[in-house]
Length: 193
Image (cartoon, rainbow, N blue to C red; front, side, top):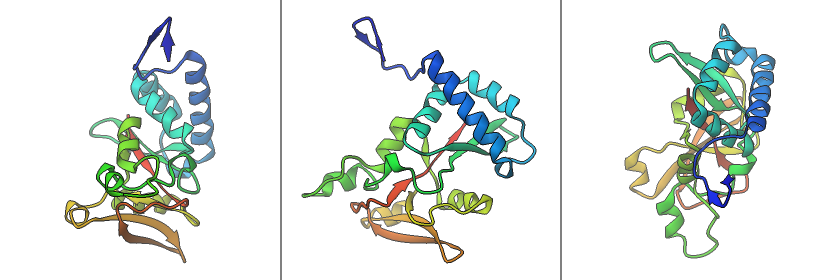
């Protein structure tokens, strides 16, 4: 975003982008009430409008194909929880290895990016295995693709990383070298507002 000749690093949306994003989020929220039973859009929207940087993160989730939606409400912290709810792993986040160390370890055919850095730049967290399994209780995702999930440090220290998918009526957790990347593997994120 530019202001005059100065480049702004602020994570803000234009009024038109905000209106378009909020309209899309509301439509998705109303169409998928099974993901957030008992929650009201007006309360979610109020939180969103008060958190412009988080709104920017949701825009990034949307822009990269994540189709973010509310999947819960943390009553203690009064935070709404959004996950990427696209049917398959978000298209704009595929063909990435797990983290920067994995990216730098590749000698040839490096991917353009890595999942952890992309998530950090977007202001979101990669789903944990537990979150991924909870998401699959709402409906089934990743029937043709797979998604990197947060990997325990002892696995990562040995060069591995975890990913999940949904096949044969079950959620599967697999491992790969963290430097691997595939056209059908991306990552799903979470955001609390």
